[in-house]
Length: 161
Image 1: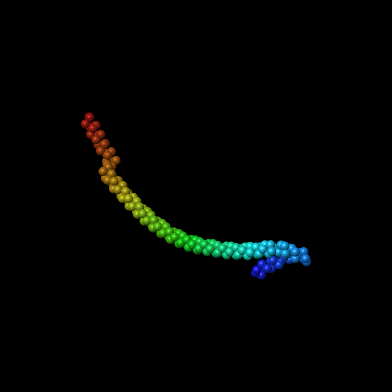
Image 2 (image 1 turned 30 degrees about the vertical axis):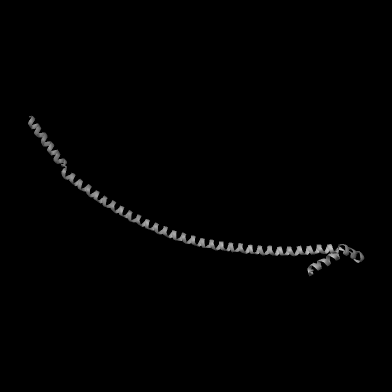
């Protein structure tokens, strides 16, 4: 018997059995059984302590594995967030550059259209002036026309008379 089992046996005998002759008789009658029960209890206690230690170790290793997974996940997410931020910045720059190029093209096109409209306006005004001058030169003055009608009317009167 080891010290723990012997101490358990002695404590059981001391507490279970009475003092004096009666205690000795009880020890003789039940002592062997009490020692086996104590040994079994001691063995169970040791097994339980061993199982608890094993569970504690397994739990500790499970926690460590979980902490490692969480740490890895945090690192992966931090990298992903960094990459996403860089991608967002890059795409934002591309969008701004594209927008700037489009705005520049719009400005150039607007300028070209305004220049073309102004040129067309000048050309149309010149065409109107030319047509107006042509109409003036082709048209008969009202006085000349009135004199012509008056002369024709007098000739017709003179011819009727």
